[in-house]
Image (cartoon, rainbow, N blue to C red):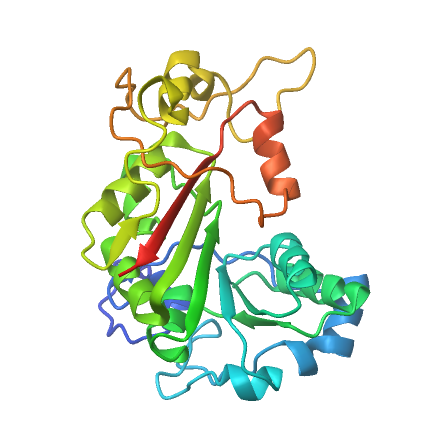
Length: 302
C-alpha cells in the first residue's frame, strides 16, 4: 500500500501546497476544486485572460508564486492609483461591483478556483472594466512576496471558509502568520476589511487580530452588550438550527453542529457596521436566507 502525501516524508517548499495541502509547513485554507472550463467560461478565458489575468511565474505548484516575482501595479494598470486586493474573490461579484463604482482605484482579485476567475473575466468584459486584474495564487504568497511592501491601500477578505471542525481550525485563512503578511503588504493607515457569517470564525478573527501589534480595530469597543451581533446570535440560537443552505419550506433546518459555545453576552464588541462598498453577493444572500447574521470587522495598519 503506497504512502499518502501526509504520511510520506517530504521537503516542503513555497508553492508545494497544491500537492500536499501545506505552505511552509502550514496547512492552506483552500481545497482545490475542478479547474475545467466549458462554454462561456472557456470563451471568456480564451478572449480575456491575456489582458486581465496576471501571468505569475510559478514555484513548484500551479497556485504558487515564485519568490523572485514582484507585481508592478503601476505598469500593469498604466497609472498610479490606490490598490485594493480581495482575497478569495469567488465569482467576482464584489470586486467587479467595487471596480465599477470606483474607477479611480485599481483592484486585484486573488482566487485559486479557475471557474471563479473565468466568471470574473465575464463580468469584467460585460462591464467594460479596465481597473481589475485577477491572479490564481495562494494568498499568503501574494501578500508576502508578490506585492511590494506597503503597496496595498485596502485588503478585503469576505466570507472565508470557516472550517467548522476543531481539528480543521488550523486551516482557517486568518491566523497570526497571515496577519503578519497582511501587515507587510498594507500601507500605513491601510484598511483590512473582513466579513464572515459564522460567529465562531468572527470570534477567532477578533482574537487573532487583538493579539497583533500591527493592527488596531477601527471600531474598538463598539456594538457590544445587547447591541452586539454576537449577543443576538447567542440569544437566538440561530446557528444551532441552520447550516450552510437556505431553509426550504416544508423542510427542517440542518445544523453544522460546529457553532462554538454561547457565552450569553458579548462584552467586548468591536464589530464594524456593514461595509457599504461590499456588494451583496449570491453567497451572502444564501447566508441571509439561512437566517444567519453577518459579522463585519475593520482593522487599520499601524
